[in-house]
Amino acid sequence: MSKLEAQRSWGERLILLVPYLWLAAFFLVPFLIVLKISLSHTAVAQPPYTPVFDVAAGWSGVIRALSTLSLENYALLGSDSLYLASYIKSLEIAAGSTLLLLLIGFPIAYGMARAPRRWQPVVFVLVVLPFWTSFLIRIYAWINILQRDGLLNQLLLALRIVDEPPAWLSTDTAVYIGIVYSYLPFMVLPIYATLEKMDETLLEAAADLGCPNWKAFWLVTLPLSRPGMVAGALLCFIPIVGEFVIPDLLGSSQTMMIGQTLWAEFFANRDWPVASAVAVVLLCLLVVPIVIYEQVQTRDLARGG
Amino acid sequence: MRRASWFNIGSLALGLAFLYLPIVILVIYSFNASRLVTVWGGWSIRWYSELIDDRAMLESAWVTLRIAFLSASAATVLGTLAALALVRFGRFRGRVLFSGMIYAPLVMPEVITGLALLLLFVAIDIDRGFWTIAIAHTTLITCFVTVVVQSRLLTFDTTLEEAAMNLGCPPVKTFLTVTLPLIAPALVSGWMLAFTLSLDDLVVASFTTGPGATTLPIRIYSEVRLGVKPEINAVCTILIALVAIGIASASLLAKFHHGGRGAMAGLAGR
Image (cartoon, rainbow over all chains, first blue to last red; front, side, top):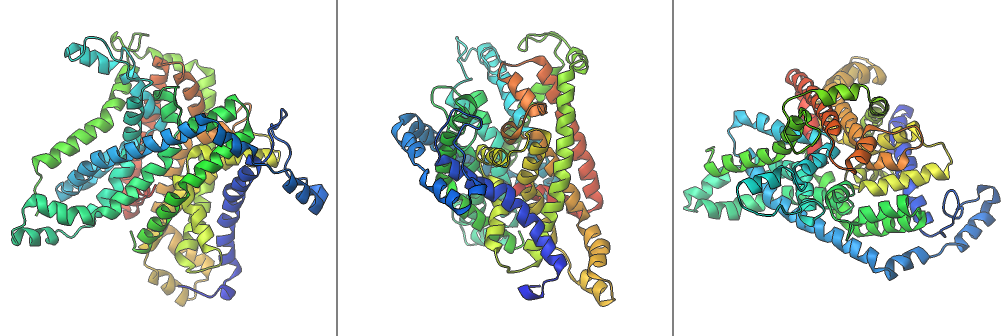
């Protein structure tokens, strides 16, 4: 189907151009503006930064704008340990919860893939269904359970496991629970997709040759499901680093995740240039995993996945 | 050779319990007669009847539904065009940038997208509110539609189109009478996915909103920050019920068309 560019009809150009221009205008250009504002000065004004482009001034305006660029916001990020702690905390929680998601998600995906064929569509829908309900609602549901006199503590007290109700909310544990809960389908589904496509005769061959089940799992199933695990891990890790809602509602206010820091800079401090600088640094941290993810995604689709 | 071992059944059952238990508890407590959310005071629909009088909440719901409808529809058009370009056009200039812009929003942290869009709206100096949220949501959810439609197009039998064109059917008519009906189920599931995502979004809407456009998630969030309230349990239960009805009708639709699974496959693509 590949045609030369010159032969494209106007209709085909339009098909490409409409989404291309939309995404360029509302996805690409905004990032350039973020970059620009992260380099400008904070001002007590509305909007709270010194203006960027003066279109009327033409080239001299552009040059003047360039000369006012400054790295002061980035210097602030480097000098205040609050930001560094926030970035480290985010990466730490993202890495930890991605690992937890792998450990919890793999057995579920495995159970799905090994379920009897006629059950599979039902099980699939059951796993996906909670994803369709609002993210906010699912986190809210956990506040119901985790609050001090909530159901979890009532249960623990009734079973006499604890004497004093422990505080679950405003702890890292609650954040981990919330993240694992919300992102579980994103981990389970890619792993399930690779396990389901796996050629089971390979396992039979291993069994015929006297390989015990656990060893066949270790040597055959696990390596073959790696693409799914990689896709799932990226799908979870990248957004979790910038997560805002979960740590804000379930976590403590002592060490904030970077999404919260950005939010606070923007909404509470109204320091847009610093918020932009936080976003740019976050994006730089995530650019490698995002590029890997895009390659995985493109390759999967090329294979007809 | 499929044996449902106890380990497999156990891990599945535990996983599903983990996924459903919190939601079930929330739904049950929305029917709690007691204002104290932790004490069970018997069954009641008190909080639902109080919701009917909550004008602000109803107003938010109406705004949210209109935004979701608009942006899901726009995203379906844009996403389908993008999917056609990605699947049918082979190599073209700027393809890497194009597919980059398509897939990046799938994983991009929402705080970044929200901030970026807001700064754009401020830079071009338009009034923030209903329309800016709609534009932001369209941008955010287009990529999900693209992934869903793309997976349908990849399994599409192109000989059907060729046959139509060989018989003298013009390209536009071929698209409308052959291609579109065949990918329609994917469009429907893409639209539904987009609608749900727009309905859900808190972060991007918070950045791009303005006076007079408080969406339901923004309102729920501001209430939730102050603690658990039975009214919010009721709102959440209604939303869950709406989504469940939507999914049920979609899966009925999928029974008649195979493309319905595209929506589910699309979820795996996030």
